[in-house]
Image (cartoon, rainbow, N blue to C red; front, top):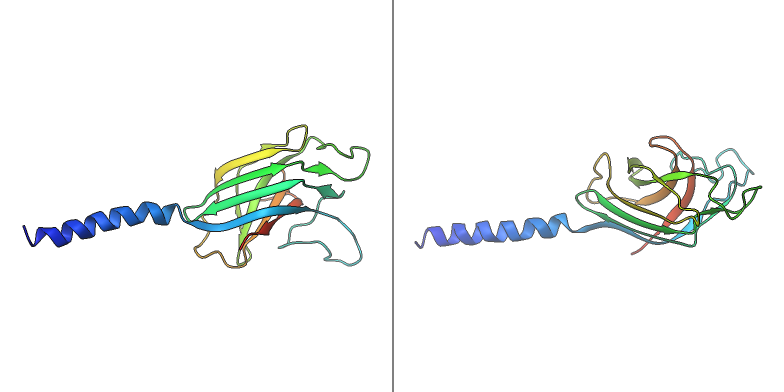
Length: 158
């Protein structure tokens, strides 16, 4: 019995620590900025090789939480065009989240924008991001991955 007790404790301890590690936060973002496709140089507003949308975009609120197991939850509010003939509308766009870790992209599936610019993404990033995620950058990109232009960027939460 004495020889089995340490192994039992080790086994219980390992099983308890695995879910905690899987639920650990990899990156968080609270707040967002819309893209402003100003052109005063060849690479202005290009982020991690992704071009901005052709017309300015605004976002009212953006929150995202990325877990170490690749799960991502994104809540976006009011992602709307800030210019052109469709100003204050979505332009019929769909978006996906793209997380960069050390410059390497990790994408979600695509969801349509609601008429008011709201969207919700609950997905698993592909490929799975590394842990730790160095220089985490979150973009909200139109269309289907790996293509698209960025419409909004998440503000990292320390």
